[in-house]
Length: 150
Image 1: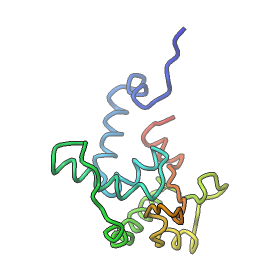
Image 2: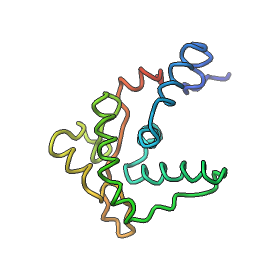
Image 3: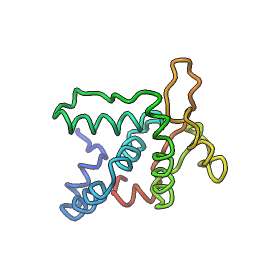
Image 4: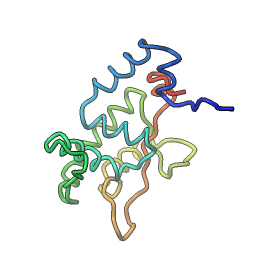
């Protein structure tokens, strides 16, 4: 006996083009930075994955090859922290995203703790010494309803 896995493309079959059009337009309306943050959250990644995801997609567009990885140095990432902090805060303001540290924290970060985590390069840059922070972007119920994930 087969069972249908509850993944977004199965919702397309259940709800037809209306769901598809709405979901696609939401994704298409995002900036490349917003897209990188939200795709990382959907994929259950960490903030340290966001900038490389963003840059890899840029490089793919430049080269036409998805085999081209991000070329961001740690220094380049430090220069992008403020930019991505503001992107994340905008997504939080829309009600689409929460930030947790650690991933299974009972409540998302808020206020000064949120600002501090998002402004800290250790939240955004992987360290082989493992002194980076484990800060997790997570989608909200509002986002899941908007793109009809569940």
